[in-house]
Length: 305
Ligand code: CP
Ligand code: NVA
Image 1: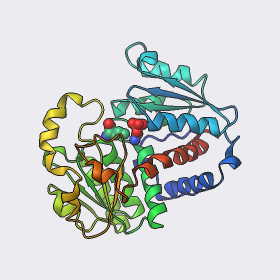
Image 2: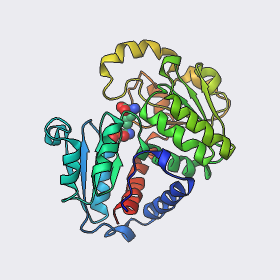
Image 3: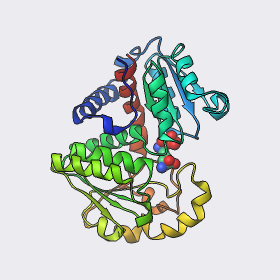
């Protein structure tokens, strides 16, 4: 049966560990995998812009001996020119896998339902699983472990990256704090699931409305844009509401450790994070970005081979 990557909710601890092991092998020895996906073709259906996700998936296919076809918003025009159901069935006759970046998470689920080939979520409004797999791998590289690490996410709690962190962190034993304005709290069902997972793993999930309290003991402070793609009309109001949630020198002065700084990128410099902090020596944002390449190779090998 074909396998998809739609949400980290569907991955077990063992699945993630297996992906990290393969990622490590790939990163260590690029040439060993240079024909792992020979003859395979990946389609990238992107309804939103992308730098990292598109380029790292395309480079992955090239370096694994396969090929990729980018289909931007004008080409497929999902649901307008043609139904997702028909696109899924048609592309399944040509391709070996699909990466989809879209708005409604339901589009990813529908694509996977009707495609007979693996479907990978390259970001929806609700979740960004590939990003967070790369983030956890990066944390593991830095700390040599995941269990017991304290990560504080500061900013928009109701976005794709935060939801994926909530699904993944408790499974690997990371203690996760989320500091966000009360109106921008994560989806309550995701929080419930994260708390259930945390209970069974002995990890902790905590929500805060005050960022200063939340960052105190953090080993890592993670932030993301206040205005995600698709929400541009709310940018002015969000700038006001999130004002106190900027990752800056003042916020870091409340942290008792020499914490690392993470951001999925792209960053809105001067909004959620200052230049000084994102460019500081403790910032690992480009390690996160680099690891997208190796994580994507591992995902593609697992699903397409
Ligand atoms: N982090 C991330 O997904 O970047 P892009 O939007 O540039 O793909
Ligand atoms: N939350 C951001 C992530 C970008 C990779 C967005 O959806 O725009």
